[in-house]
Every structure is written in C-alpha cells, then in structure tokens.
Length: 338
Image (cartoon, rainbow, N blue to C red):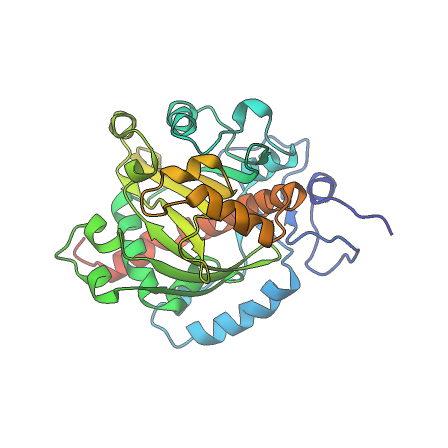
C-alpha cells in the first residue's frame, strides 16, 4: 500500500470524515477544506479539522470528563477549525529558502523586519543545526493584548484550563510559583518571567513533557527598538526544555503580538533542535553542546526534524485558532469590570 503524504491529502480531499480513510503513513490530522480549488478564499475563511491521531482521539473524552464539572466547561470544544489560508500555505510544502530564518540575533532581526510579508504559516528544516522551524501569523478579531496577558497568567493555575486551548492535545500545565502568577498586584512580566510552566501535550505523534521558561524577548536577542517600532506589546516567548533535562534549551519559541483595528495580530516562531547560537542564552550555559547531545540522543535527525516542523506548524495553527475563538468571551466572563 503506498504512503499518501499529508500535503497530497490536503490538496485532493475536499471533505473527509475522521476515520473514513485508513492507510499506512496516515497523517496526524487531516484538514478538510470547505472551499474547493475554484473558490476564492476570503480572509477569515475557516475549515474543519477532521482527522486526529489515535492518541489524540483517546485524549479528548478524558479531557472532556475532567473539564465537565468546571465553570468554564462550555468553552471546551469538539469541532475545531483553522484558517483556509494557513492550510493552503502548508500545502505548498517546506518554506522556500528565503523564508527560512536561523535562530540567531540576525535571524530575529530579519523576523522583525519581514513578518508582514512572510507566509501566514510554514515549516522547514534549518540545515545548520539541524533544527525544525515553524512560523505563523494570526489575527484574532475582538481579542486584545490584555486578554492574552490574562490568559497566560490564568490558564496554568489548573490543567483543565490548558485543555480548553487544544482539547485533543493538551494534557497538563502547572507553574512553579502559582501564588506569584496569580498576584494581580504584580506586572505581567513579574508574574510570568522566571516562573516556569511544566507542560505535557501531543505535538503530532510526539508526546512532549517539557518546561517553558518565559522571559522578555530581548533575553533571546529580539531588538527592543524593533519591538517598539512595530508596536508589539504582548510577549510569551521562552525556552522549552525537556522535563528530565531542564538545563538543555531544545526549543526557542517566540510569541509577539500587537493590537490592530482588525484585532490582535500575533507572530509565532519555533526553532526545535540544536544550533551553535544557543550558547547565547545566559540562563542555559553550554546550550549549543547540550542541545546537540540531546537531539542526537532523541534520534532527531534531519528527516525527523523536518516532520516535526510540519507537525508544529499544524499544532500552532490549530491551538491558536481554537483559543482565539473563545478568549474574548472567557476573559469578559472572568473580568466583568474590564
């Protein structure tokens, strides 16, 4: 039986019910486009996610049971959608060379100067490293930077809240100092930065058990002048390390957002693997050497990393679209005077 690539399935299958197709090499999830190739895709058009890998299918009813007694259970979703324009961007395959950015200070400067022209979603292998690379740009109508700051201080206090974000994939989130995270007398940075989150979730077929160390974006090399020039006021950037190797920077994650008339605009970048520039992270001394050894130990060769990059792009597309759908409502419900 031949293996059908996910990109081919995305291109040729206008609608496919979950479980209706079985073959070796099945994708982690299949996105069924509601518009045909002849239809003009309009900004904001969404398409249903109709395929989830078996572990995710099994996880959803478990999460539903855990969430059902919570006062926010109504925000737990079964039918997830994603932007058609992001699906179509991924259908084109790996990003062309001009859009593959390294995780260096120079690369981050390029990100800040070109994010408006970059594809709305994409993935690639960064050969020098090697690294998985994924990128996205989201616009969330009716959502503000203040709402996202609230979310990042609210949801880690209960794992069930984290499940709302991606009901099929998110399992656990906890924070080192929950009292500090919940202290509204402190600024957002004082609550989140230096207060690591412990997360477990599925990224495609890989189970991730990691620690996110959030910090100011300048700590990773993003130019403060460019942040201010572009009007970015929200940040949830960080380093992700394996739970059992907390000193090893395996992922550099950038989340920056700004308020616009159309809603909150967010740019996301992920570099997963190893790179010589990881030595610059002051809180992770020897980061290049440690990440290189761990990447090798995990069996993350170039082929595996390219596949992981694709899975990360899909995961980002799904979870942030899901969150953007209900964030304004859950924020207002929990902040009636806002």
